[in-house]
Length: 166
Image (tube, rainbow, N blue to C red; front, side):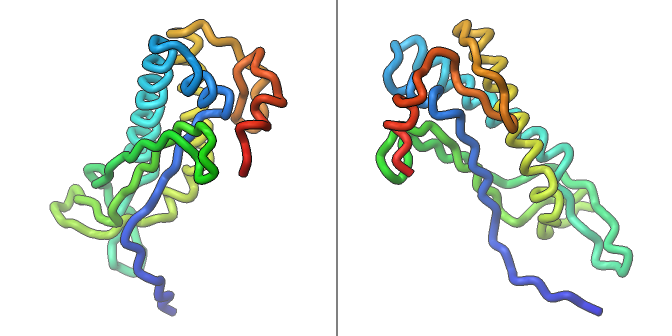
């Protein structure tokens, strides 16, 4: 039995810090803003590297649909500074083409299953890496981690809610 899937031109992986980080980025000093922007970029890079190593494969067209190792992804990251509602929200869209170069020297579509299987761990990696970098670079302290996320300690919840219209 053959399953026919709708063609998919690409994938969008969106990575964003907790709201308190976006608020410190928007309202902080030039040094804080720069450190947060760089930590965010470094965390995004860590996720792309993780996905390329663990989630991106192609498949053979043979009945066993065996995985084929690939060289990586063709992607671009687009940084945004606000939410659709206009609130401060530093985030990046990593937009990848549904195309990869295999170790068999062919260009072919990505097997998207790995991207979906690793999306949640990749999000946790982003958050953990960002927390580590901001703790190291700015001395930031964190609320307890819940479901992979933690807000910066000391940022009042009403302030976070006030800048979270969506």
